Image (tube, rainbow, N blue to C red; front, side, top):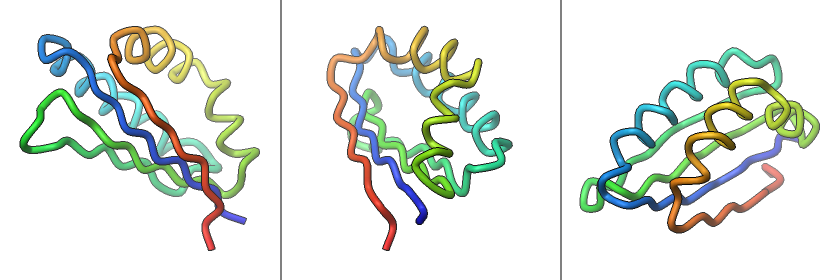
Length: 95
């Protein structure tokens, strides 16, 4: 069953450019993963420090494999998460 992740991120305004660039770099790597179906980065036009990610994988195992990749570790865990002031994530089965 397809598995989706929806993440809402907020950072300090001065970190928005770095977060945006890093998420776009992660997107390029993630789209090449065999279990990835979609990785869409959204930016709030009224709040440049607010981002929403929509990710879809062939199943939960595919997402779990994604979290073990070098690009996830380096860019998401190493760069993005430490700069976030808010983070909410939903994990969903796609019907």
